[in-house]
Amino acid sequence: MLKIVLDPGHGGNDPGATNGSHYEKNFNLSIAGETARHINRRYNAAVYLTRISDITMELSERANFANDLKAHYFVSLHINAGRGTGFESYIYTGAGAATRSYRDLLHDRVAAFYKTKGFPDRGKKSADFAVLRDTAMPAILLENLFIDNSHDLSLLTNRTGLMQLGEAIGEGIARALQLNTKTAGTGATPTRIPTAASPAKARQLLKSRNPAAPDYVAIYVKMGDIYRIRWDAVFAQSLKETAYWKFGGDVRPEQNNFAGLDAFNGREGASFATPETGIEAQFQHWHAYFYGNKLPPGRPVLDPRRNAVLSAGWGGTLHAVEDLGGKWAPSPDYGVSIVRDYMTKFVDEVTPSPPRPANSPQNSGGWNPQAEIDRLKNDGLIVNDHLPNTPVTWGEFAAVLNRLRDRLSPGTRQ
Image (tube, rainbow, N blue to C red):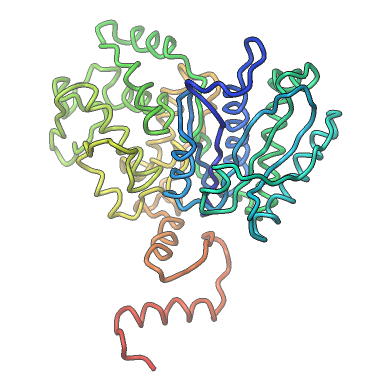
C-alpha cells in the first residue's frame, strides 16, 4: 500500500507566520487533518502525519520520519505571508521527473479549487528547502494563501473552506499517485490524524460511570503526541478493557495494565511499575500495528507483546481503529465496539461503523490480505505495491514463483 506523509509545517515553539491571534502552525495542522480524512475515506493508501498536535519538530525530524517509513510521497503544508495572495507550490531544485510529474498534477488540482474561490495561481516553483532536499522520495511544499491578507484569511478561518481545501489536496495527491478508490471500507476512524476530542469530556464520561476512577487522561494525551496516535481512541479502548476502571476480569488494578496486554487463556497479563509505563506500553502496541517496527527515538520497549504483532506480519498494516478486530482481540467487532460503544460518548467527530461479519475475508482467522502482500514485498518476492483485488498475470506469478525457487535452492537454477 502506498504511504503518504503529510507534514504540517511549524508547530510548538515555532508558530510560523502570524496575524494577530492566527498562527500558521494551527492552519497547517487543520489542513493536514482534513486532507488525511479525505484520503482515508476514499482511497486505498496509508496516510501519516509528521505531527498530530502542537509540538515542536526540527526539519531533520520531519525528513527522517518520512525516510524511516519509506514513504512514497511527502507533502509539506504551509501558509504564506508578505501581503500577497493566492497559492504556489515548490519542489526541490534538483528534483527528478517523477517529482515534477506529481507536482504538476497536484498543483493543477489545488489551483483549480482556488480559482473557483477567486484566488490566483502564483505558479510552480523550485527551492532548496530542507524538507524537499532531505527526503528520499518525491516531495512537494504547498503554500496555501497568505495569512496577512484579509481575503485569504477568510477562507482559512472558514471550516467549510478548510474541508474543501483538504479535499482538493487529497484529490490532487490521488491523481498524482493514481490511488485506487476504496471498494469496501476497512474502518472509518483513522488513528494517525489530529483529534478534536476534549480531555474534559473524557474525564466527565469516566467520572459519570465510575466516580472513584483515577484521572490518567493527561498521560493519554501526552503519549498520543509522542506516538502520533490519537489519544482518544486508546483511552476509549481502556474504558472498554477496564469497564471504566472497575476491572473485574483477569487483570487487577495494581497491575497498571489498562488494555489487557498479555492477558489471554486465563493469564493475568503483564504488570507495569506505574500507570504511565502501562499506558505507554499500550500505545506501543498500537504503534506496532499502525507504524511498524521502529519506535519513536529514545523510547524504551515496554510492550511485552510487540514482537507477536510484528512476527504475525501485522506491523504497520492497520489504518483505522476498526481494523483492530480479529487482531488485538479475536472478535471481528472489537475495534468497531471501541468506536461505537465508547468513543462516540465523548468524541463529537466520530461516527460509529456497522459491525463486521465474522466470516469477512479481512477477519476470518485474523487474515489480512494486504498484510500478506506487504510481507512478500518486504521479503523481496515482489518488488512493487499491489492491492489485494488487482489481477495477476501468468508472467507476474512466474516471476514470484521463480524468486521463491531461487531463495529455497540458491545456485541450482540456470
